[in-house]
Image 1 (cartoon, helix red, strand yellow):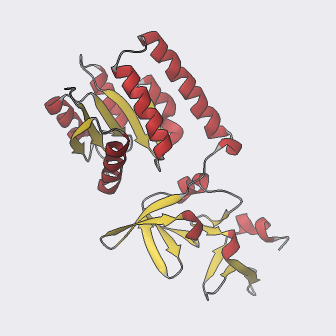
Image 2 (image 1 turned 90 degrees about the vertical axis):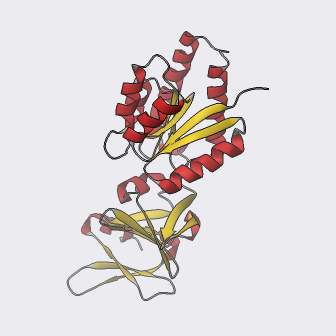
Image 3 (image 1 turned 120 degrees about the horizontal axis):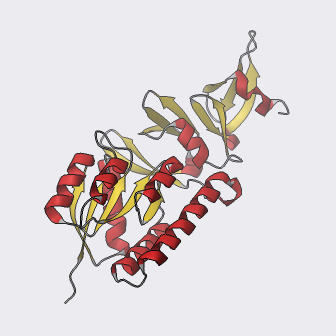
Length: 262
């Protein structure tokens, strides 16, 4: 009887931890998720307590972040295999320098997670030498950097995990009318329903198809086909008027050029 592979998940968002746990257990039944950490300190404690073979590690966490956790663990004789999971690809180079076996961008896609699991399984079964693994990591890093700078190869956001009161909703991006930044949250409007996410507007802008969603203000992104018409007041301020609604969204001067031909 084979032993299950012990895994720890570290992410400061409980909903995202639960979602990753569900996805992992679905694509990799042979694992035993022995702990879930909400910050870097807990990740280190769980790693010391359970000696997991694999650590799925968010980078942006309060206190000790994921990169620092990986640096600390790299000094251990039995450091776990680390997979970074984050919404930001700017840490990719540092992640691989810290010996991460893979780097997953949120929102997670099952097909991409399956490839990660296969990579981990090969590593744990010693199918590849250390030099071969290093070469693979370099190829992965090059691909990630190319994808980051090549919009034509980008896979755009398809759905969003959003909260409303104590409930979590899976929102189809095609149903979203607009996004409005509000302090540290972003409000997602779908018809009469409004949800909250913690993803910043600037991050969302890079994840959304620019042919479908337009940034019209520093705090607003709107789906183009929800626009009924454009209006202007006596002071020259431009507004987007939405279909089937009395709502108006302000267009900052920086984005006036989007509507010159409309």
